[in-house]
Image (cartoon, rainbow over all chains, first blue to last red; front, side, top):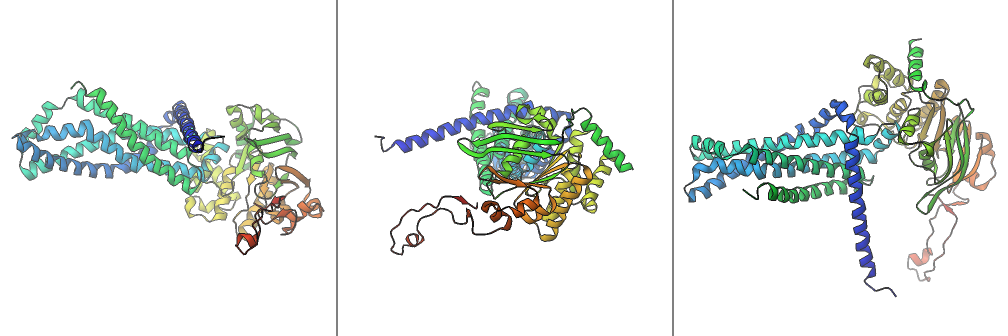
Length: 264
Length: 300
């Protein structure tokens, strides 16, 4: 006679198997995307078009957020550094915080919410309205024509947006620290210049944002492509994109940071 | 003359390298079975579609019509049996082979499936740009010819969101015939159209078939409109081929199933009510709840 708890165990097992299968499907999906990227590079116009939708249209939210985050950093940093009489190091604090951590991470979270969700919804709706099926019936591979250009556009956009976020944040820190509070402008810039290392800080930040770009774009495109072709299915996929991407970014950030800066 | 020359060039581009089987039968389906897992969808389907004819595949919703269309298009493979399109067995073809075959097929989807981010012009030009290395000036002329054929040349700058349902269906039709396909497949082309649009689409199906010299397969459950324009009808029910014949033969068919479908009668072998318990018991009117499965077929 089966135990009373068996259905629960069975349903947990079924969910686990489902998730493993989905993971395998996602791995196959990224493999196919990479294998079918030739079309995108042979016709760069396809990538440029998607760069506009994923990158250029995300710029406003990235720039405005970067400015405010930098201003808050300037304010908070000044309060803390004053305690130790080190307010001249404000530029270093703002720059390192942004270039190493906040720039890649916050811009990735914003990118997932703005561009990732849009990619999922667009591809999910294309599937629901049979646009992808129509493309297949026209002997055009949707992975090559629709997915791959968006993937590369996302991967290219992310580091550029993170760089813009950091630059804008530093400007925000400058406005608050130097223009409004009165920290010495020379110290602000010179200490920043001497403390920020291109290889150690900037390149590592760019690597982080590149990895985040791959993860977010992969999740977004897969969720859209795998979404059930219904209104509920597309909305669920869009939500999953934002949640999964955000968690993936934070987890990846911890892993990358532990490798990059553990010896610093 | 110019139009004929361009059309000839397009045909030559896509068909010159393709082995053409000089048979009167374009599509041949032999003993095809198809199932999703253990659930059978199609059972023992046999049918032939001659070249140049307009053939309708009819049946109530859920009878397996669209599945059969997808099998012919090579989207899915039959569990058993054989589907030959222009002499080529679809289940034996690899992805490249299927794509090669699909370049000679056109398909009109139920609601058009236009690419919403492209204009009407770009939708129709899509296949030409993807598959043909034609100069943009020639693509423009061809797109205008296709749009003119469906009466929408003046709408080439519009976006799909600006079109009515009937217009969207006609643009999709222009897109489907962009490469002068050897076979046109229509998946429920009349669904959700007003009477005028419906008549226009029905006539276009016939006219384009005769003018372009293609073969057409129309999946539909809009009986009267379809019977007016097709040459032959296959009737599917519960995944089985129940009847076939000319429109006149189908109208005169005495089989209760076919008769009910052709004349849209509520009473007949296809039951309106989904199997359920006793109505009084359902409403808690005192009668004992007793399951009484009705069995038989049901309108989906």
